[in-house]
Length: 275
Image 1 (cartoon, one colour):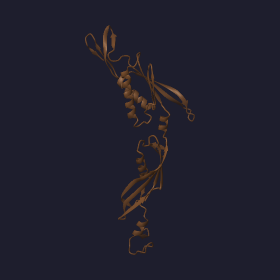
Image 2 (cartoon, helix red, strand yellow):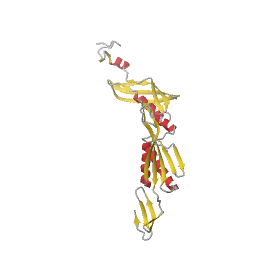
Image 3 (cartoon, one colour):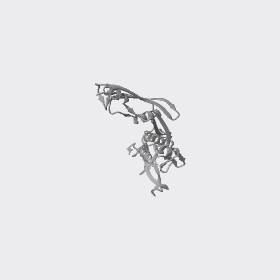
Image 4 (cartoon, rainbow, N blue to C red):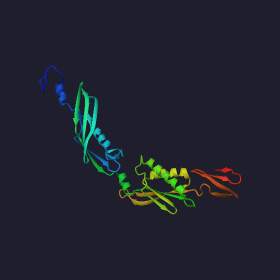
């Protein structure tokens, strides 16, 4: 047999031609010349198959992932290695270089491509809500029959910020668009109801107190007919604070500690501690 491409005889034939001619025509890698990626200009979340995912990834990493996702390597390749480079950014277009090295039929094959990755900037739904000051819940921090202490407010806000920072890793609406400082206490507007409830849970662990939820109808979804609500969560701290004096059954006590589950007092006559 002879190769119809080059005329070589007595050589290994693959798909009707010799191995050398086969390897010359062989395509090791397939990748589109032009790739488009849509990302959120605020958080770098990527729109993929109709869903936003993988936020806060550097733009360069998004480009590399787009290249990797669009590469197809031949089934005949073995021990393949792929090198990706961004040669330059031209506006919103990344001019890239892709090199693949692999063993095919016992021979080393090297193939290069120079695809472009175009970045389309948009705004994801969560960032759109954040920019509009969207909120689902309001935490009303109050005290029972007294004003809030400055120290209580400072501690509460530390807990709120710490909790929301932790929640933000999985809930992009875990943020505070607004704080209303009122005579009777503070109102904290929270983007996500789920995160607001987590905040209240941690505040109760620290201060105790009682909670009450009050839904308020904001509008109606015309497509479903269902009402859209915001939730006001009132957290009322206990009446007593540390160092307060309390009279009970003709005995005078001093509050020595208040936490989420109990109030501890000291009998001033005999120094007995009661919780």
